[in-house]
Length: 165
Image (tube, rainbow, N blue to C red; front, side, top):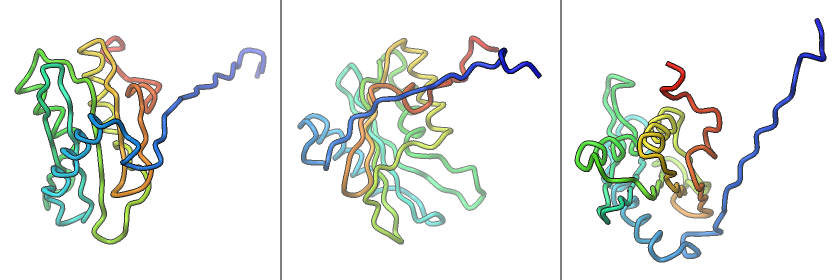
């Protein structure tokens, strides 16, 4: 084997971290409050892990979603995809500007930022590509630090997208 043909590629990402909810800009606190309200309405009798998401659109509408579980796993839907698919269906021409995500566990305190799962990352990526602009993503647990990503590309740097089909 010829080692000279192999190249190493380093991928880096930059995220902003706020020490807590109160450090967020007021507009983001408001968006996160919408996500918290959605989280509190999650239907999660099986995982006991409630997630809420809120998306700010360029028409100033806020669309929310919460995880919706089903006894027949995995036919439920995560909060992020509930919100993003609803936004895409109700406001197909609006751009998604910002997304807030929060998660809580009924068995422990979630004091670490909880990012979107892989399936949700792929769905968010699809809409960033569709609208040709980034979606700012903020995520947190119930308390503690809040992470901000300028784009889903920071959380999923090697995107699978339609150009490869």
